[in-house]
Image 1 (cartoon, helix red, strand yellow):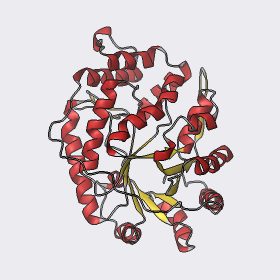
Image 2: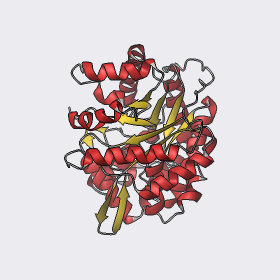
Image 3: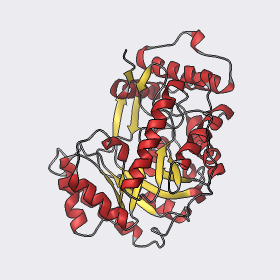
Image 4: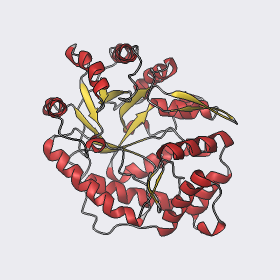
Length: 365
């Protein structure tokens, strides 16, 4: 039973009693969210305590695995160097990152968006994943996304994860709320969707709450991490524990800025207790992880300029409307990305636009 640790003081106040009561066996820490923070001795001591016991999990949120922007190579290299330094401070059990991209030409940041299953995307993703593995002292895995434009993307995400992870023996972080979001948004059976993933690779499960967003085309379930874990996700947890034989950790997530309500701390405790109750009937959830096979260094950065332009066009489409035809080329990957927009369900397109308004940031200067 692990808890995703947050930076906000309100989260610290809510989570401290859980630690004091011995309810949290491990911590997951999104280290790159705090690289610009002032020193935090209490937090560092807590992370060090869990790290010394082999119970600190690293979870990156800003590497942007599938970004093809060549201008982003320098930022990624800095990110990897900082990750190496982070491991010198704390011995992390493993590292995970999200599948998808969140930078593109002209955009220094955007919402994490999916990529289609194409040879170009797989080649690019393997190159970026190899660099993560090379910079890491332990196993490296990838997490599924909640957002998709179409049912086809949802059904292909498990295969995309498998193709990316197979060469390095990487693991899957299966976010069950993300999976449930996709199932309810596209009218799919959650159990059948679960079976479309490489379940033997799942070493970590995430559970969280979220919210419903209304669009002019209908409601969309979003992974906002600001509410209680739905009963349906707890049911999925029981199913996943039966079908995923290599699970080591189950992580409860809730954003640190979602504790304004006086009931939020009690809700977090209730979620933790519900997960612990589920785990009490299963064995082996905290067994050791094996480091993947060592890889050679990867000095030459793989580039795909057409894919980079298409990612920028996708962001621009969500940011300000349809993109000119000359932004798209004829490569398979780029055509697939354009198809994502052309065949997107209207309510998912509206949700993508809302995500872009919330998270998108154009380059300046």
